[in-house]
Length: 165
View 1: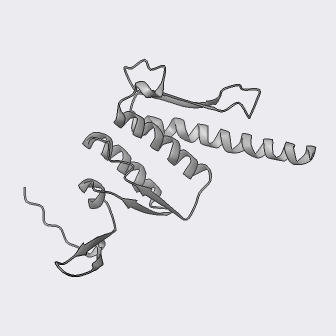
View 2: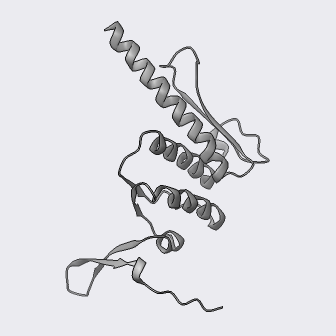
View 3: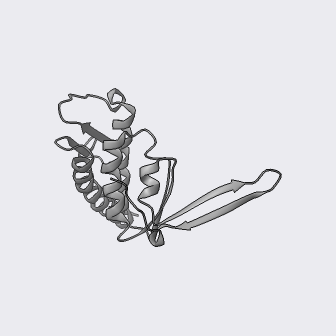
């Protein structure tokens, strides 16, 4: 039991270190000039819980609840993508994670999505037009009057887009 406890603690510390380092990186992408970090509530006790610190540029925040809805979403996304990086998977499902983001923050989120799409498949449920525009494939559900629901698929890699300037 002692050897198993030791192995668990080593693996936790390794994962925690990887997630904490990745969080700092992703936080600076999502909050240019800001500072974010993850730490243990008690550095000597791995069971003490995690403390997530998020300080956007120009703000002094003592609690995450003091951030705006979009800022809380970005801090959560930084944490989520940090876990994804530390413990990779071949695919990820994200449901309306960018709903609270304005256009500038949405573009930062999409930068990270673009980085992840090189190594994994992402399925993102969204109503955001910019997110849909960044997709390789779109799926939708439609229903004609008096009919039943149908799933519609559109491969966006073969669609030519003409931009009007």
